[in-house]
Image (cartoon, rainbow, N blue to C red; front, side, top):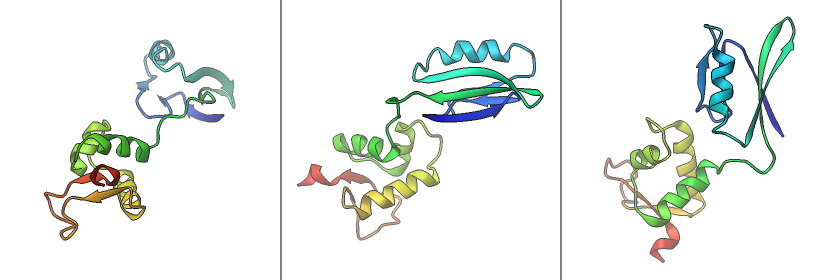
Length: 133
Protein backbone atom coordinates (compact mmCIF):
# COMPACT_ATOMS: atom_id res chain seq x y z
CA UNK A 1 0.00 0.00 0.00
CA UNK A 2 1.37 3.42 -0.93
CA UNK A 3 0.99 6.11 1.72
CA UNK A 4 1.64 9.76 1.16
CA UNK A 5 1.50 12.23 4.06
CA UNK A 6 1.04 15.91 3.36
CA UNK A 7 0.88 18.95 5.61
CA UNK A 8 -2.37 20.69 6.41
CA UNK A 9 -1.41 23.79 4.42
CA UNK A 10 -1.97 22.23 1.02
CA UNK A 11 -3.24 18.79 0.14
CA UNK A 12 -2.91 16.98 -3.19
CA UNK A 13 -4.03 13.51 -4.04
CA UNK A 14 -1.47 10.98 -5.25
CA UNK A 15 -2.04 11.92 -8.89
CA UNK A 16 -1.86 15.68 -8.27
CA UNK A 17 -5.43 16.24 -9.45
CA UNK A 18 -6.85 17.60 -6.21
CA UNK A 19 -5.44 20.83 -4.87
CA UNK A 20 -7.12 22.46 -1.90
CA UNK A 21 -5.78 25.31 0.22
CA UNK A 22 -6.65 24.90 3.89
CA UNK A 23 -6.56 28.49 5.09
CA UNK A 24 -10.25 29.23 5.70
CA UNK A 25 -11.14 26.34 8.01
CA UNK A 26 -13.34 24.52 5.49
CA UNK A 27 -10.51 22.75 3.69
CA UNK A 28 -10.98 19.33 5.28
CA UNK A 29 -14.67 19.33 4.41
CA UNK A 30 -13.87 20.26 0.80
CA UNK A 31 -11.19 17.56 0.60
CA UNK A 32 -13.62 14.91 1.90
CA UNK A 33 -16.19 15.92 -0.72
CA UNK A 34 -13.61 15.93 -3.53
CA UNK A 35 -12.17 12.57 -2.44
CA UNK A 36 -15.57 10.94 -3.07
CA UNK A 37 -14.55 11.00 -6.75
CA UNK A 38 -11.51 8.81 -5.96
CA UNK A 39 -12.74 5.58 -4.33
CA UNK A 40 -9.34 3.99 -4.92
CA UNK A 41 -7.75 6.47 -2.48
CA UNK A 42 -8.40 6.41 1.27
CA UNK A 43 -8.23 9.80 2.97
CA UNK A 44 -7.81 10.41 6.70
CA UNK A 45 -6.95 13.23 9.06
CA UNK A 46 -4.50 12.54 11.87
CA UNK A 47 -3.10 14.59 14.74
CA UNK A 48 0.64 14.17 15.10
CA UNK A 49 3.71 16.16 16.06
CA UNK A 50 1.64 19.06 17.36
CA UNK A 51 -0.22 19.52 14.09
CA UNK A 52 -2.79 18.06 11.79
CA UNK A 53 -1.82 15.83 8.87
CA UNK A 54 -3.76 14.62 5.90
CA UNK A 55 -2.95 11.10 4.76
CA UNK A 56 -3.74 9.67 1.33
CA UNK A 57 -3.40 5.92 0.79
CA UNK A 58 -3.79 4.23 -2.55
CA UNK A 59 -5.67 1.00 -2.05
CA UNK A 60 -4.28 -2.28 -3.39
CA UNK A 61 -5.25 -3.14 -6.95
CA UNK A 62 -6.08 0.43 -7.87
CA UNK A 63 -2.76 1.43 -9.42
CA UNK A 64 -3.37 3.79 -12.34
CA UNK A 65 -1.98 2.88 -15.76
CA UNK A 66 1.60 3.95 -16.31
CA UNK A 67 2.29 6.73 -18.79
CA UNK A 68 3.96 4.19 -21.09
CA UNK A 69 0.79 2.05 -21.13
CA UNK A 70 -1.35 5.12 -21.81
CA UNK A 71 0.91 6.26 -24.67
CA UNK A 72 0.85 2.80 -26.26
CA UNK A 73 -2.94 2.68 -25.99
CA UNK A 74 -3.22 6.09 -27.69
CA UNK A 75 -0.84 5.15 -30.50
CA UNK A 76 -2.59 1.86 -31.24
CA UNK A 77 -5.48 3.72 -32.84
CA UNK A 78 -3.83 6.80 -34.37
CA UNK A 79 -0.59 8.56 -35.26
CA UNK A 80 0.15 11.46 -32.90
CA UNK A 81 2.72 14.20 -32.30
CA UNK A 82 4.20 14.64 -28.80
CA UNK A 83 2.02 17.68 -28.15
CA UNK A 84 -1.10 15.71 -29.11
CA UNK A 85 -0.07 12.82 -26.83
CA UNK A 86 0.54 15.27 -24.01
CA UNK A 87 -2.90 16.86 -24.44
CA UNK A 88 -4.65 13.47 -24.54
CA UNK A 89 -2.92 12.58 -21.26
CA UNK A 90 -4.33 15.74 -19.71
CA UNK A 91 -1.04 17.62 -19.55
CA UNK A 92 -0.71 21.28 -20.47
CA UNK A 93 2.82 20.90 -21.82
CA UNK A 94 5.14 18.11 -22.93
CA UNK A 95 6.68 16.87 -19.69
CA UNK A 96 10.17 15.49 -19.15
CA UNK A 97 8.55 12.22 -18.13
CA UNK A 98 6.67 12.00 -21.42
CA UNK A 99 9.89 12.68 -23.37
CA UNK A 100 11.63 9.92 -21.40
CA UNK A 101 8.77 7.46 -21.95
CA UNK A 102 8.75 8.13 -25.71
CA UNK A 103 12.54 7.61 -25.88
CA UNK A 104 12.21 4.32 -23.98
CA UNK A 105 9.35 3.08 -26.17
CA UNK A 106 11.37 3.95 -29.29
CA UNK A 107 14.41 2.09 -27.91
CA UNK A 108 12.25 -0.96 -27.12
CA UNK A 109 10.86 -0.91 -30.65
CA UNK A 110 7.27 -0.58 -29.46
CA UNK A 111 6.67 2.69 -31.31
CA UNK A 112 8.29 4.33 -34.31
CA UNK A 113 8.71 7.79 -35.78
CA UNK A 114 6.91 8.84 -38.93
CA UNK A 115 10.08 10.70 -40.04
CA UNK A 116 12.99 8.63 -38.64
CA UNK A 117 15.47 10.43 -40.89
CA UNK A 118 14.56 13.72 -39.11
CA UNK A 119 14.14 12.88 -35.40
CA UNK A 120 13.89 16.55 -34.35
CA UNK A 121 11.42 17.59 -37.04
CA UNK A 122 8.52 19.78 -35.88
CA UNK A 123 6.33 17.52 -38.00
CA UNK A 124 7.47 14.36 -36.18
CA UNK A 125 4.71 12.00 -35.13
CA UNK A 126 4.71 8.57 -33.51
CA UNK A 127 2.80 5.39 -34.23
CA UNK A 128 2.49 2.00 -32.62
CA UNK A 129 5.00 -0.37 -34.20
CA UNK A 130 2.54 -3.28 -34.56
CA UNK A 131 0.04 -1.07 -36.38
CA UNK A 132 2.38 -0.93 -39.41
CA UNK A 133 3.32 -4.59 -39.60
